[in-house]
Length: 322
Image 1 (spheres, rainbow, N blue to C red):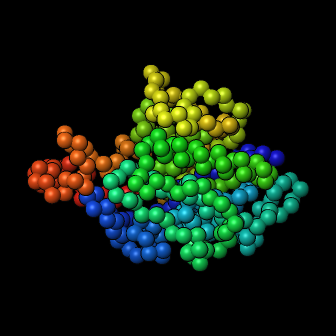
Image 2: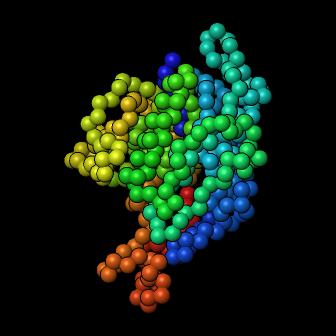
Image 3: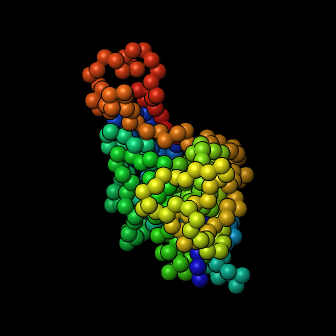
C-alpha cells in the first residue's frame, strides 16, 4: 500500500520574539519550555486551537497513520492533544470499514520541517535536541532518523524549496515502504506554503503570491495523483526558480509523485476561524550589501548606515516573526 493522503497543519497561535538584525540576538517575551528564544510555547488561545484541531483530526477519513513534526515546541504542542486523545482511545478511530481500531501513534521529529529563516551574516538559533524534547513530550519516536537540519545562516527561497522537497520525498518513500496510507505533518507557515508548491509542482513567479494559505491550526489536505514527469527544475541543478509568462510555472523539484491540494488551510472547525494568516514578503534576507559590497557585520561602526542617518533601512532593529 502506498501513501495516499498528506495532511498538513500549521502550529497554533504562539507568543512572539524579536531580533536585533545587526548582532543576530534573539529575544523572547516569555520564557520557552526549551529555554530557546525562538522556540515559544502556544498562547492560551493557541492551546484552545490545538484542542479544537484534535477533535477534527480524530474524525478524518482516511484516519492518520503516522505523524511528522518540526522539532520546534509549538509544532509538537499543537498536535499533542490529538496524539493523547487518539492513544487514550477517547475517540474511536477506524483503520478500515471492518471496524478495526487504529494502532497507537508516535511522532517522528523531522528537522526538514523546521522553521525558515532568511539568509544572514550570523547564525540563527537551532531547535532543542531530541533528548530534551522527549522529556517534554510523550510518544516521540526516538528511533526515527531525521533529515539534516536547515542551514544555520538561513536559506534563500530556492534553498527552502529544495530542503522541503528533499524532506517530503524522504517522508513519502518511508511511508510507502511501511504501508502508511495517510500522514499528518505539523510545521510552520513558510514550510506549509513551500510544501504546497513542491507537492503540486506549482511555483508562482511572485514568492508572495496568495496560493497556499497558512492560518494558525489551519489544515490542508493533499491527495496522490499520477507520476509527474520532470518538466522543470530538478534538485541540485544550481538554478534559480524558473520564471515564465505563465504566473504558475510547473516545476517538479525531482519529486517522483504528484499531488493535488483538496483542502487549503481549512479553519472551519476552529471557533475563531481563520487567524494570523501569513505569506512570504520577499526573501526576508538579513544580508544587506551597500555600494561598496559590505555586509551588516562590517557596517556596525560606519556612520553612514540608514539607521544612523535616521532612515528606515530595509529592516528595523527588531522584527517579530510570525
